[in-house]
Length: 546
Image (cartoon, rainbow, N blue to C red; front, side):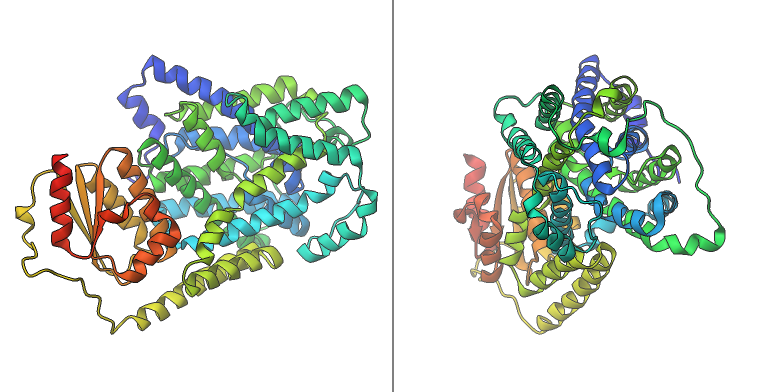
């Protein structure tokens, strides 16, 4: 257990933190706390719970995830990805059912960590992740139309198509004040970065729109008119559970655990690339599990690592878990002393913020890239996307995983008898001992697909860090899927940041076409790609001398 659970915070304390870094972490934590304020409220409201439950989640889960987690910079709390799940569980089981499901999900996440399933992420192919992330984004967008247009609707259908049918029938009831606030909020969030990067646009939008609504007494729905006052205290309660009912909550709990695990590890991987670090995946899963067990007792909802807030933390200088803990304390102070003002926030402003969140989640560029790829990836992408939007996220993930496995087996069968040849000159250098110091060689053998892509990219980063020129041999690679291309591109970007030059050899024509389609040729010039190893070595020697 000792090797499985090793929180980064204690490792950082052991190695020591400079006063300069401590100050940077505190300032970053305050900024991230301000960024998280409107998001935590918006995610809670969109999920169908009262605003303080989002704040409580960001405070308690956010603190635990930073204190016990396996990442130096991870920021935890409620996220947009959970909106669809939480809303569905609330409709079916009520808030007590959500509490029980979240606690069970926490137990499952801890089991994932203890069983060393931290590498689980690599078994989820990139098209599947893009498919359900884009699907969730579209569902979130559709849930915000009521408040964005100021429609006075008591009940909205949960089904996607029925929901839009209801909107269409009620378009003549649009509240122009609410629509104006939504548009202004979106414009402020999008364009405020050109004026300042220190104060988040969502916070500026909330302040301005709340003041305007209060000053001019505009007829729009606010948090107070919809939910009442925001409590300035945190209470403790136990859910009522009979053991005979436990099995009912296993399916929603597993959905929360899978999505929470995937999103937290994705966020940790992204932040690793930003700080050139390495997170402890099993520790991160256990910390996420503990956070989701504890938080519901205080009225919170499911939590995971938040990619956008984690990136904000890194960009503002946060480099230790102290920043995440300060972010939680900042939100606690805001809730205790400024909660009375938060109740005045217009619902249309929250809708505007969530529409921007949905757009950022949509990953439309990745969606478009996968659509240009192989028919296998397209089938997984569209199946997962359509099922997420029209049916259910749990079914979408299950079908996506099964489809990915079946299509991969079909793909492997198709190339079983194919020969991949590299054009080799007669005097090809095969003795690596003759290669000069400063040139490293990494040969990839076999398909670079979603299950092996993470391992290949991690090894590439390790080798690249010790090189001046890195030659990547791909003579025995029959194909690379979109997950492999995605991970390869991220590895190349990180390696190049250290000044290492990258050369490819033995890339077949179909993979070269995939490189072009997926945008890898923007990072690797065409004159760095060779059809033979000898040419690649000759070029690397010249680069070594420059």
